[in-house]
Length: 476
Ligand SMILES: Cc1cc2nc3c(=O)[nH]c(=O)nc-3n(C[C@H](O)[C@H](O)[C@H](O)COP(=O)(O)OP(=O)(O)OC[C@H]3O[C@@H](n4cnc5c(N)ncnc54)[C@H](O)[C@@H]3O)c2cc1C
Image (cartoon, rainbow, N blue to C red; front, side, top):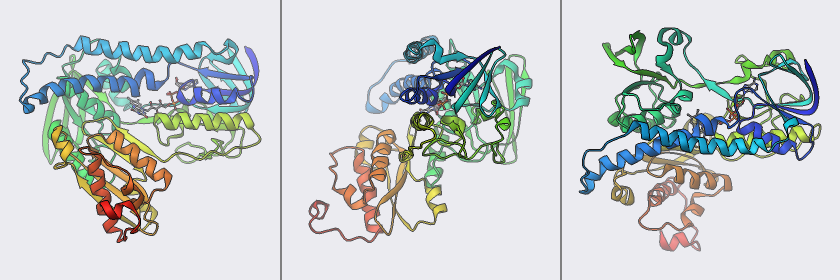
């Protein structure tokens, strides 16, 4: 057994682990990163990037289908599944190689392959070959798809998770997608638009991430209009029928069934905290097995152990994992001194069509917080630019604190939500009042004019009088 001693050990070479490594190195060169699968990160290998590549192909196919409405008639559209998946994998590999190249530049004494688990608070066992004693440890070992155990036995190789989709050499002809969260919706819509027969089965009745009841119903209506979607099916049964899967469920007391090539379980992800034997550290955990930690330092319960990224089960998105890795790396480097870092305003985007976004506080967070707030809203169905582009579906609701007149959050389903979500998150982070936001320029004709409509309504609902010297008084 090889025995090593380092100042800082990092478990996981994903986005959070790599960001932590860069920051630790500012303080010590005695550092070791442990990775148990492959370099390249979940984002590049099987997450953000390949999913957006598949969605981009689906958008191209959909644009051709929608061209008729503009008087542009295309002949039969041929979707070449082999070529679609070939581009997805080629471009994915480019992104992965870029990440792998940067890991290749790390000195060999800074990295080790193998599964890490704690054998005490300061010692990690790596497979059966190495023990690393570390003064400080950063846990950055990500999350994995949750797949119902009994389905694995029942369905064998007919059951997939999102990890498998981007290895396909061709598109299948039919897939039952379980899950109406981010991953389920993005992949189901993309596959549907690429000609795969899809049925989406949810559980809770919710479709997508929006928490505002009026936008949640709009999401359900919009996605159900395009996709065969059961938001809350009951008594689901799956069974293998030769090379196919039979899916049975109840819908409003009616028995339904359908047969598919494959089942895609997009039923959530679970943090990998459970694969570390964390309990031997003696640090208390809550009922779900998570230790308390400080989001501004990454430090777990005043210990020498830090945590970052999806493994924390909080805001499981890329830029948050990267920030959290930065913070944990810096603080592990400085330990026992601390340098708390403020966190950015929350921002989520879902790359469906129409896109979804939440900026700042969600509706449900605002409701729970007891803040006295006012709402402004707009529907995109008659919004000028959206109608021009034939993207006139959806709505936006913006929320402001009554006392200060500041924007505190927004939810949106609609065109360009990936961009509008940024504008809104930046305003929340700056502490803009609605009056200040209305002073920014709005070009014509753009989707942002829809945002201005919602802001004007919000300004009225705040019962605020405009300051006479402000430009909005003259022009709005
Ligand atoms: C299909 C999909 C689409 C997504 N799309 C988006 C998107 O559009 N935008 C966005 O912001 N986010 C998106 N995400 C989320 C984003 O990919 C993650 O938030 C991010 O990759 C998390 O980074 P991480 O460093 O925490 O984990 P990872 O990158 O998963 O890194 C963890 C690493 O730890 C390793 N590991 C695990 N256990 C051990 C162990 N015991 N010992 C050693 N190594 C271990 C793993 O092999 C892995 O390499 C998507 C995710 C998925 C799955």
